[in-house]
Image 1 (cartoon, rainbow, N blue to C red):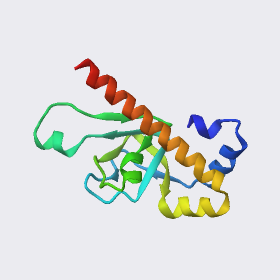
Image 2: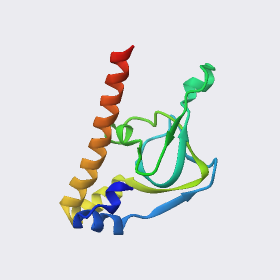
Image 3: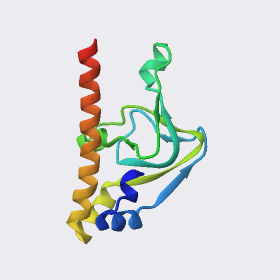
Length: 140
């Protein structure tokens, strides 16, 4: 949620337009293999993921825990890939902001700078992911 509390007036305008959805503990946010028609910003609470391939092949404990401020599924969304993992609400549940193509199109019509802000946030997340994967690859 760091960016939602930033002093940038554009961020304030964006945060006023977000609709937050609540998921109870264990409730599925999305499933691996489904069409990726949105990405999510985890606003509060925790979310957990466990790729289906890991479970299927019993490769041990391989879970990701997402904390507030995390962006989920932006890579698959912008690349138009199916969802690459399943995520569920963890802890006491979670609250997320949903970014659909329709929502982004509406932002674009209202103020192109809002769309640019969302894309910048998602791209930053993609860059962090790529950087983390490269560091992991270098260590192996």
